[in-house]
Length: 317
Image (cartoon, rainbow, N blue to C red; front, side, top):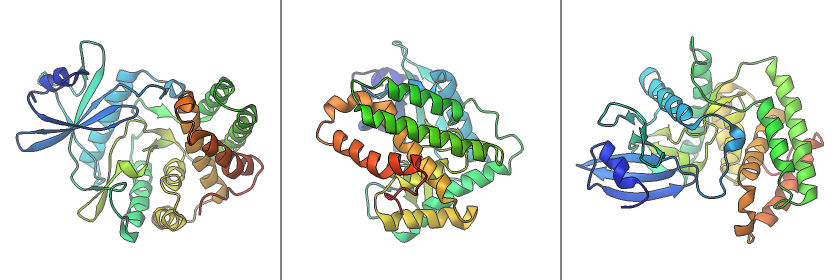
């Protein structure tokens, strides 16, 4: 097997395992079946055009802190997460001969939210588990000891710079609209900064990162988790599905723990998820000619312009 997989598996003592590629985004992610057990192997090798440099941070430090964080969640809370697996040398992180970072996690059995019909119970439970994550951290004595990404004012500034550098890939009017939206986003963060502390959010609550198992929702792929305001994950949930009823059920679960949502804050962090996608991946526009230009027009009309003008965005709820 090429691409470093054989080397990675040898470091965990899993030679001759069955290997299935699951997806390739910020990591190459595989299911590994070995000796009647299953694992999740991740190689830190982003797909071409997926540029996360705007998020900042040193990759090995971020990976180690991610594993430490989910290990803590698994040991100190009842939030379902995977368990990090050590290499034969006892480390949680492996570095391959070409420098690629690798990590191995226990497998989470269940049904991915993007693979099957989603029921009301599943959707409400998904909103609840992400709200519970936030409330659990608020009750902890030392939740700020991890080296993580930060979704804050400085990131908003870097996203604006990144957007303005995208003239080869993005229309001038779209760039202008994105920058205006980011300025409005900064205003919302100003309002929230004085009222709450930033805690670690999952920050990527897509349907593929939620697993339904035994009547509970498990959360996987924490590689983008980071310190953020309380609306980071619920804003992301609104972007997980375009179905308005599913959005309402996700929000219902979140509000059952966190209380009635502030619509302006919700819109702000939904907008941020769209902006992160565009700014981190716009260099792929030339391979996405069949859908990306249309999507940009739609986001400009239904997200960027309404939000930056102070209106509720019409594409959710």
